[in-house]
Image 1 (spheres, helix red, strand yellow):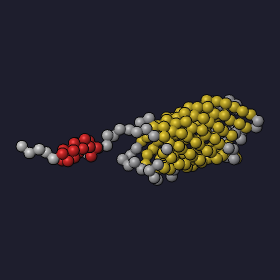
Image 2 (image 1 turned 90 degrees about the vertical axis):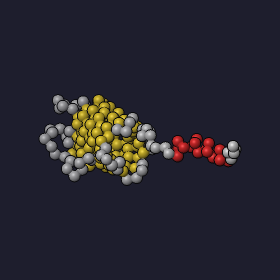
Image 3 (image 1 turned 180 degrees about the vertical axis):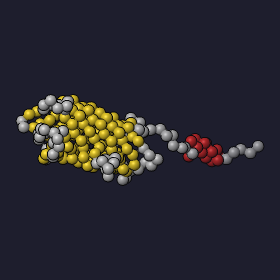
Image 4 (image 1 turned 60 degrees about the vertical axis):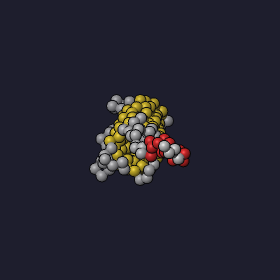
Length: 193
């Protein structure tokens, strides 16, 4: 019987050892990732105050559909608008909150909606008055992928209803039901770190 060629045996062993990686398929295993979200727009509140806002949030994925984040939101009083609210106050706002988001993803990876809820603390300042209180947050945003790591963030129904976030705080100036805000014309970016 003829002896096998040593080079052939070595090549056969290398091929058998590498066959798993040669024909490997995606395992579908989820890899966690971090995001940085920076958003601006206008914030209107229940005391007829409106002003620009800045939101910065660090997010971390729990699964393909669940994300949690810690957000800092700030609003500066610019002016008043007319509603049926009797009190006009010029509050400046700072909020620190923890949020959980659920991703609603259509078949494409280039567009998704996120529904979120969270709670945290709010600091209001107006006329040399400081108020602190507990805040509840709900939101819905549209995420549009523009590159592998960058997404645009906007209102989900920007043509019909250009709002994305509602906040309710238990801070009261008078017998009103509390301090409420809505984010109007939000626009931002989300960067995958």
